[in-house]
Length: 188
Image (cartoon, rainbow, N blue to C red; front, top):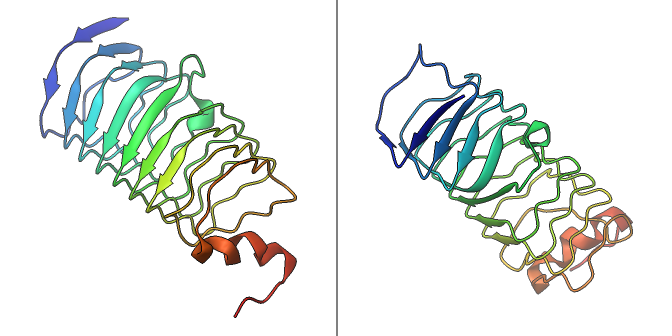
């Protein structure tokens, strides 16, 4: 396995770069196009992705440990195929449409100003996570552990309280329709 530490990767396409089975520690990726790339088996530890595109990348068995994504496109990623060991990340102003977090344990995850349209959180553990100003239109929450999750500024969500663990989750009054939608209750 190749190993790189404290490296900065600037805007390049890396079309012929082999990203598989590589460990990156404390690296910064600026405006790199990883879309449809094969990142399988790689490790990203304490890394930052700034303005990158990872749409539809293969992240099977990839480790993301304390990774920050800023203004990055992550559409269609299947985080449920990642290496679950020490999996932790933060998302700020990201496009994450149709991203899958199926059955992941990712407590304390911070999502800020991100578009999570159609994201799948089925059977995930999101305890004490934050969805700050996030679009959760068509996001799937089924049998999801949402204890102490902050949804106060999230919008367009539909969460059935009978199908999810919402103990001490936070919602604004504006978010009540998203909690009652499954029960066909009309709020005026």
